[in-house]
Amino acid sequence: MAQISAIFPCSIGYTTFGTPAPHFHGSLSFSKPSLSFKATSIRPSFSIKSFIHPLSVQTGRRRTSAAATCSHGEQFSGVMTSSTELEPSLSVKNKAVEVVHELKGTSIFLVGMNSTMKTNLGKLLSEVLRYYYFDSDSLVEQAAGGESAAKLFREKDEEGFRESETEVLKQLSSMGRLVVCAGDGAVQSSTNLALLRYGISLWIDVPLDILAKEAVQNGGRCPSTWGLAPSDSFPEVLAKLTKLYEEMRGGYATADATVSLQKIASQLEYDDMEAVTPEDMAMEVLREIEKLTRVKKMMEEAAKPF
Image 1: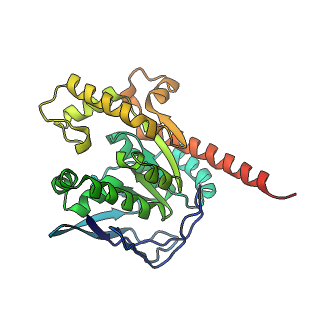
Image 2 (image 1 turned 180 degrees about the vertical axis):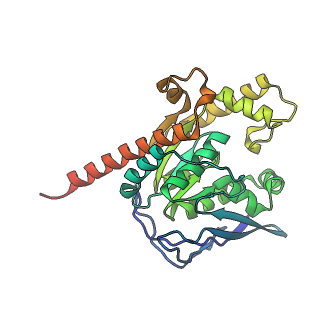
């Protein structure tokens, strides 16, 4: 059984897209294997740009600790992800301004197979919406003491690892103004799927051949759940990803909306799907969010008594 703890500076108080989530300002903790957050105030101007998040995890007799970094501002880097310069265009910025008011601080969860596109999209959205970015898999890995320690944790205590994933999602879903790149664990249980309902969930659907090419170029470095080896050829990687995709697509499909890279490439008349940029994807995500918030507002108006 894993005992996880962390401290994340944040000011909580918002309206969620789905079921109302807890409203708090201060500290929150759980008695079971848990992840606890300690909140501090953040000025609306977002002048506080960087925080250090110490995390620790205890499994059996061993306890380890790590430090994760999250920043907010013009240069935004997520937990255990490289800092990428993504300068949004004026059109994306303007669309974000239109959307953010109706969001009312609702968090955004990006599901789908991990990729550079998904990560960069999450960072770009956090930039234009003035949100904070987190990668749920990286939070679990950092708490466990790194990628190798997390892999060992999963192999030795699968149930405890899954509980850790759930606790991370539970805490993130109770907070507002976040863009979260959610790992596959987010769609593998009814409990985790229910936690995603506290925000807006979007399936970022990237073609498998692009994912396979990226994995091969990275020497097989990818989520341990993919089961890839550095020596795997492109056909072998593609076959493994196809099998995993078929297992996961039911969970991905429960998202509030789907943003397909292939569809966007077709709409923009790109000959090469790899020509699609994070900005292209971000514009489509913002349009989908706009539709969802509009429908929610219409439903709320219809529910009001005459």
